Length: 323
Image: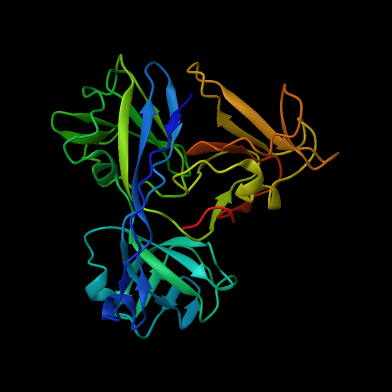
């Protein structure tokens, strides 16, 4: 299970947007826009993440947060968030900075949130809302990415974590389909905090280009205890272990007791490098290698083997990265 990242990112100049109902009577700035190419290798499971997100559909400051509700009296969510797609809200500053949740529109000024954020988010925290990426938006409505089409037994499979396993999506007879489902799967969501696998059954390396906006504030992601968690690096560039912020939330120890970060090894054999924070010296340590590995880079998708209880990890924006 392996991926190779070709970091080809083109950043466009940020653009200031004047106040409008869409941006809740505030001045908003679009995040940088770019593209990145991911090499999907044949014969293996490729762990990756698109990294880049869609444009901001609504932004502002929350005036009230309750159990599974969020309110911005300056917003017009009915207009800015049409009900044809799923949306994800991210807290961009304040007490809850980095938290994200799926939202649906209740009325013009109120959202229903999939998670209860009331203990972590307070009035005045700012937010951005984007359409949640889907299989169709990432890989093309007509499979413009070029994944091998066919029945589920021979086609390339996209494995998307669901919290209760994986959705297995493939392209056949002109439509995206899901193993075990009779319907089409074009709108299967792919959350920006998740890593996904592409099981490449085609005979050649496939280069997939992802385009979109950069997440330019830190991101918090849930990590379940006692299992492997499939995460995105979030940023579309290489971030070192030392700069990632993961050390602030992971359990230290030795190779048998610490949380383990699994990163594709880049050799094409589907293997992984395994890293942990050594409690004896505080170093990022690689199993089977010597020295401080804090400078090693994360790939776009990574695994966290959590040996402690459920928690959240914070993926930081490195100070050296100007977004």
